[in-house]
Length: 488
Image (cartoon, rainbow, N blue to C red; front, side):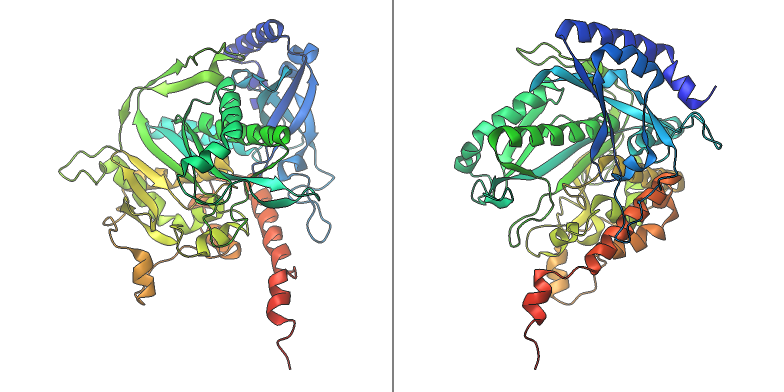
């Protein structure tokens, strides 16, 4: 039996397929989006009438392998990742992710796991290694089997709400760049409430939000959970924001640094490793669940293995310390996954906005790439709003696996202001300062490179090397402003 056959015929999954039919009938669902996630975090897939749910749940849909690379071509006109001769993948629905779209009750969405074509000459029906979401699920399962620990994660997804000019392009933020200003938060209230409404209806347990210190910048948070569901919810959140932007005639901007001299859009990842715990279906006041229970489930209970067990309340227990050691060892390579675009490095290089540019760890120290943000919790800071959370968290799991396996000592917690040290001329250890350097770092790092197994690595590095080359080959306004009249 191939992995595709074993996955699609799993008895628990088949029960989920039958339960989805009951949800379809109860809610009057007419159409379903079958979606997965590309190398850049883009949501792609197919749609089909709900009448065909059972057939598609059993057989799956087919789409070219190159869809995992957005079906983009290189600057030389070559298809990235896969050529036109490649086979078609098979997408198999994950019933536990089925949920109604709150803005169009006739439509639902379901995430899918990807497989190689059934007729492939090599590994027919095998897991498609270019499936970043499927890779994360498998990497986390392997990590839990090896260490008995589960990764739980929460994100801080900053983004900006921008005016749309007459030409349809961005025309500044909807509000002023006043951090934590309730009046600016109030200006965005209609958007905030609509996003929160849709979040709750799609299983995101919204907990708090604020106006950040850039034009139209909001950070809206939801409850942390196991890493797979949090990654799915971040993906869902982006879809929600895009829909709300359509409804309000504005732009939902997840670009890391659209404006200079104000803060960028980060997406800090807060996480810890846990033993035990149980899933609990969360009830949202006044709302009937419009989807499968898994969409509304959160893990609760268990033991946080990052909590201090000694006399220093700042220092995590050995599990946390060794996990930190693995991450610190691989910070340069991880930067290619957390800061994955050319624009990401505008965030890291525009000084004065607390962006993490130093390769170290500390306690409550925002100059560090990794900090202990509270007892029992780490915050990875070299990550922005363009992140593909499936790739980054697979990398974090790989780094922590090495740290735990080899008991890597991360060294002392950094307490100094590294910005001031650098300005004073002291030697500091910096992260890569551009995408090219970050790609060199991950290429040379077997641990993090192997977190993108098989064809995933080929797709990622092909796509990102081309992105970097395109940038280097492009004449920008900066070039013109700097050099147009430099001689004679």
